[in-house]
Amino acid sequence: MAVFKRTHRPTPHANSKKKTPSKPDMEPDAPERLDYYLPPSSVNFTEAIGKTVALIYYVDDAPDWQSLEVYFTDGTYFLFELMPRVHVCANYRELRHGDVETIRDYGIVKVSAPGDGGG
Image 1: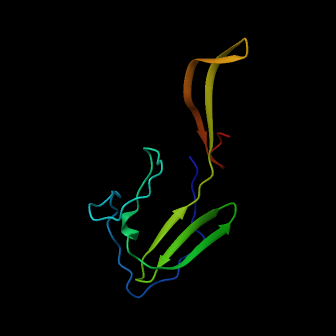
Image 2: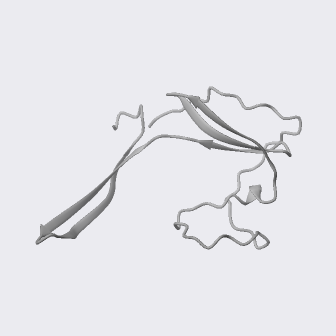
């Protein structure tokens, strides 16, 4: 398993408070979403609703640290750590007369990240 070390420290804020992580969900008073497809695994970050973005900051301290930070004017921010991974999906298929038929779908059989020895 890869261990990622944070080498970039975000700008401290005077009103910084540690909050208990919560599972994001769509709130009933949230604005209407656009009519487009979102996969079931999508996550809605409702904490950002109604906030004003002050700065979007991309950190590229390869290979140890990549992140996207979205800072709001109220002193809060979202941190998205970018962790490259390789997913290996396997399918056993048959090709006859130009048609491809999946006989067995194995799904994801291997997930590896840099430094974990799996890739």
